[in-house]
Length: 292
Length: 250
Image 1: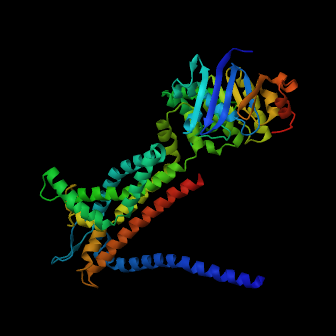
Image 2: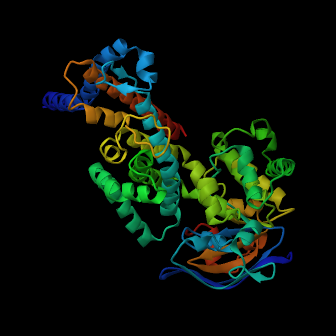
Image 3: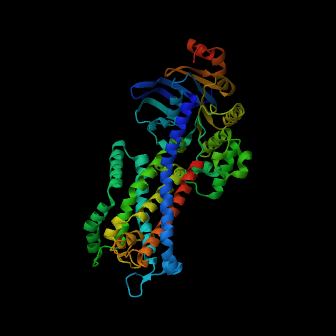
């Protein structure tokens, strides 16, 4: 009997292990595949020319494969989204976690959850119909689609990640810290910003990194509002193409096996490396939280 | 009996429907230690927290009666100013997760002191007053979370002293500590009463006998007896007090 339960446990354990390994296997498969299919074009073009070339013209008579415009666009777009989104998200989180009356909090949290659930194509659509014409009229430029529109859409898209994770971190701050501060004669607001926020700083930092990851990986919404022309992003109104949108929009018409197609894989590899870097940063912040 | 620094007059307190404090009237003498004793749930901690209005933070609390400090009813005065005067040390040591220096400087900074020299001076004085200076003077920039429980509690006392309160409320400050740390805190309390008025909640009757000048015995939200500690423990006036201090219940 005892022997039987033991072997059953072994089997169950084995099944769970296999299920867990499926995920690991997928990650490994994607990593290996991306590296194998991304490297040839990089080697053929030359790593410096590929990463730092400022001209992307795969269908010209003398094709050029410089992806610097995409890299910079992705970095600027993400940075812009962070600059706009983080202050809004952070202050909203402090309000929700510490100050908001229960009913207001419930309504706003519902809204934040819904914001998180809206498909990115809908963000893109609303951006196209509302934001792009709005920017065109406001600034009096011929076309409103471009970097600025993409930044605004991304800033809104990263709000839920930042708000939710920051609220969780702020709510986890032990009440004893806040009581100690209040008992010293600090006002509630002073207490939130000088005790609660510093105590939750690794969680808040992690939420920002999560937002960065979301912004840099977004394809559909930015494709619809960024203009999607491979220009260098030298103005916030410039029509631009992101790393993600370069892959998404050109995959369909590049010839399989061509250098063009392989270069798209290389772009995906670069994007993948960015995301890996962001994940490592995220783990660093979360680990810092645990050791405390 | 010393001059009263806090005067409590017919204080009642409710948590929602249940009354936690009933008609409390007492005077807390200045520059002495007053111990609040009684079984769990008797209202002694609630009473303590009323004195610096920490109960205000609980939404369902209702209070009637008055507590006078410095000639003013504290429920009508400005709460942050009151808490600066009437400091608090909690049951569980709760240093902020920041450096020892920043823990002590937190209060003074909150009240507008920016000068580095002034803050340095306050930090040293407070840590000396709390008898922990020698142990931490070489690691002021280290995180306070790394200190032992007893050191953390003395740090919390130093943090409370840094805003120069007149009264120090202590809510079972030694219940989470080992005997050696406990006796250090007790010694400290006895030194501090030269300069400060201390009100301490304790479960430990020996502690009340050892350190307090006055004792208040609470039972079921009522103040049963209040008087000099020596007298109360040798000749309690109320039968319930006698039953409690001789260990018949509680």
